[in-house]
Length: 417
Image 1 (cartoon, one colour):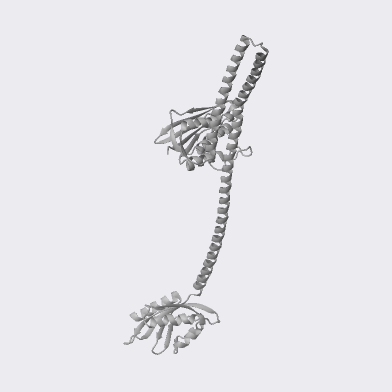
Image 2 (spheres, helix red, strand yellow; image 1 turned 180 degrees about the horizontal axis):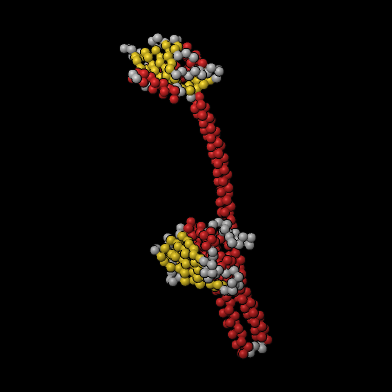
């Protein structure tokens, strides 16, 4: 078989397999020749069209401008090939999507295009899928936009709720601090009442005995023995009054300093050993009617530049947490607070021999509003306040170790300055 015939058959086979038509356009003669024409198209009824310009009238009016512009660019040599999609009527009058690809294969000496060769295929099904996909993408973009707007609104609402929660938390923390200060004042009144009451009783008794001894002096019946008894009574009463007044003075000074520090956010330099003793003195009213004890181990002076009020609040909350949770239902209990130096910082080791905690409770103990005594007066803020003060205000750290039946061990580090 001659090579030309073999090539023609091979070309026919390719056109048949793709379904495309092969066309040739003689621009000089304005003739259009087809091979394997698309018979279902209105403009494809003839293999040879002597007036190629007539074919343009079958193109959809909305697509003609792009069809003409793309062809003009290629004829001028501005593009390597011609590739355009457009709509044309079929024999039933329906619009079909076509894709035409071609190239200029001959030009005159002046560069003017003389002949073009190319293919045209029906891409209606593909185009419909493309349009459906575009519509689907637009719908997806619209849904994403709507979901994004909804998510933004939800985030704004969540942020507003979070801000409200932080405000409420700050209010509750402040209320907790004021409640602790109120409890301190009540403890002051109760604790000072005892030495003052003893002093008043002793002074009243001394006053009565002084009046009696005066009457005896006036009546001339005062004996030497009676004078000696009065002297002994006066000495004992004076000592009793002085001892209790000193006790009251010690309590007032201790409570005053602690109360001022608790309500004041300013930092100052202090001896931690002395200050911790003052704190424990202020907490004695809470321990007075219980079988529980507190021991302080702080060898020598321990000077720090810090916030005293925060230290008081942490120690008070840890002690009250031991009383309410660790020693609940127990006949005895011991709290030990040991102070030592560690790498330029101060380490306070707080321990109690109470009931301890499960691992789940230990992991959540510093969370705000977490409490194991829900409905029994527990606010869930005590240990959260401890963590916040120890880390944020004092700039240190605090960690806890505990297990059921083994009490708790808090390791609390405070920068010395």
